[in-house]
Image (tube, rainbow, N blue to C red; front, top):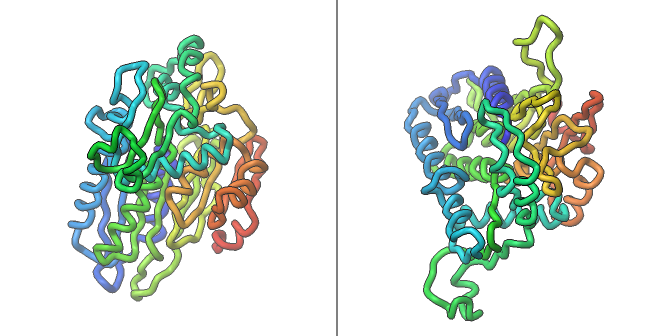
Length: 364
């Protein structure tokens, strides 16, 4: 649930800055549409575009795991594996379980203000359509009781919990999750970060060490950019400004800054892309788990830079919902998540960053 325009801006500027041919064979690129967004890849050190086709195949495989709307996806089946009003005792793949497990931990640390069980409410909002319909108040109120991360129980890998007399220890495979009736999981702030990590791992196993992956608002850099001399240098990733261009320059893209990075993910969450205006009010896609409506605060966007795409994805949304004061130090202390930098941009034009953000990433 990140922004399509930011994704394209990030990717295009990254390619513009890093698109030189390398001594070891140049680069190959490709673009597709998965996860309800544009995905793009550039792999350096090769002229063989087979790897791009393989990455697209991997995206197709992951979509069949994480899509909330494809009826044959694993997540969809998890959310709809029992009739309404019925609890679910489900067995899922390691990929799906690991995503849910990480997001669950952040939901707990954030006391449910960031909550991965927001799906019963988020599916009422259709920010991808042109209809711009605000859900009925009663419909939201009816779904809110089912938004509570406590309503899911992560049991773990089945072979590790046998002997606990769960379902008389029947023979199952995978990881077990118990979900209370009518509760559903939303991985819109999780899955693309996890997939970015896994695609980087895939590239490494194939022998590549220089690539850039764009999945919506998520940009993942594998290593550094391989230049013409066969040397590695920083990728240059542009972060689009949340502020509009001056009158008469509506088509001009404004960048907040250009980051110099390698081996990290850059993820931005904001209120200004997946949104619509209705009766003079702006509605955006980052929802408050307590109200079921878009979060109302002083923020326009949060950008996270982290070695972990999964963490960057989750934190960009969690930090936006909860704010700087309550998230940054709390995440470092309670979650042990220390390897990240954050930039918060506010509606009044002010910017707040974690210590070291500029030193590490602004080298131009």
